Every structure is written in structure tokens, then in C-alpha cells.
Image (cartoon, rainbow, N blue to C red; front, side):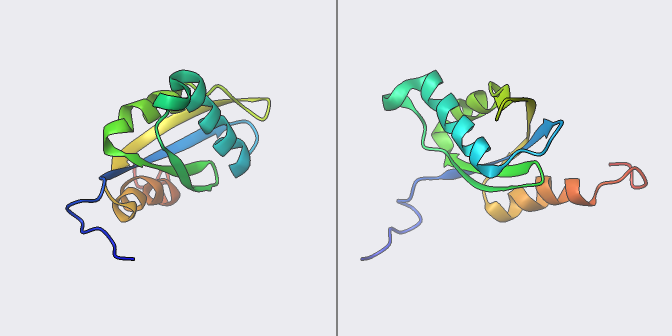
Length: 118
């Protein structure tokens, strides 16, 4: 099977986010709540195809088509509870590649401390 050339592939966007909560949340809970939030908000026919590709230590990354970016961001910010505990989702940023998303948003949080002003 031959792959599509890059000019014919659908463009993707990668959303970096952080979940702020009192206790750590697990990957399964985040995936379940995200998919149910998308279904509740847009229904089965209009629901965007978003996928959680990475989640660790409260920080994660979601991949979605570029034309459905705003729908996924809205559904993510409407999440209030995961596994019965209150959470606050924060969108750190959006990037066009996995590498730039990790470098700009996720690695900055890992290396941040009060000494360097970040």
C-alpha cells in the first residue's frame, strides 16, 4: 500500500495541556472524559477526531485535524471532573509538529524553576 504524499495528507495540530488537580489523574480517566466531553458537546456525527497521544505527570498532548482545533479546545476546557475529583484543564499551547510541541510547552515546564524566572 502506497502512502499519500504530504501535499494530500490532512494537516494536524498538537495541543499541549496540563491538568491541575489535588491528586494525580490516570491516562484512562483523561481519555474517557475527553471523548465523552466531545460526544456530549458535538454529538456522534459532528464530534471531532481527537486522540490523546501522550500524558504523564499531569501534562499531555492531543492530536486533532487543524480545522477541528477550536472544537477540541472548547471540549477540553469544559472538563470539570475526572474520576470524581475536581480538575482544572489548562491549554499550554498549539503546535504543528510533535517535536515543537514538546520543546515549546512540555519541556519548558519540566525545566522551570523560580531561579530562572519561568
